Length: 79
Image 1 (cartoon, rainbow, N blue to C red):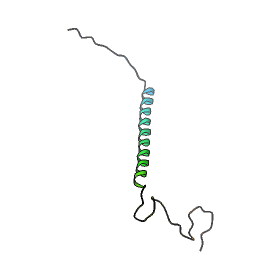
Image 2: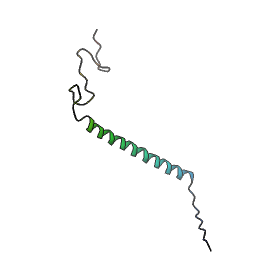
Image 3: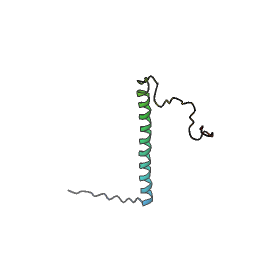
Image 4: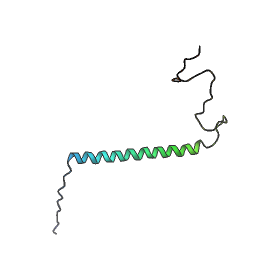
């Protein structure tokens, strides 16, 4: 029984190893963000497609109030 031992001599310097690790982490972060964006978009199409109980379409619609201005409008508040 003669077993042959193969010795592979390979060296990865710390700079290359760091680059590989950062590349893999960047890819995973980008994939996670992309998946989250598409899932959010899909949820938006599914859950906001109908009317809610108040009769408003979608979310985030705010009724305007006369005489009230938001910050940064450039005008002085009325007293």
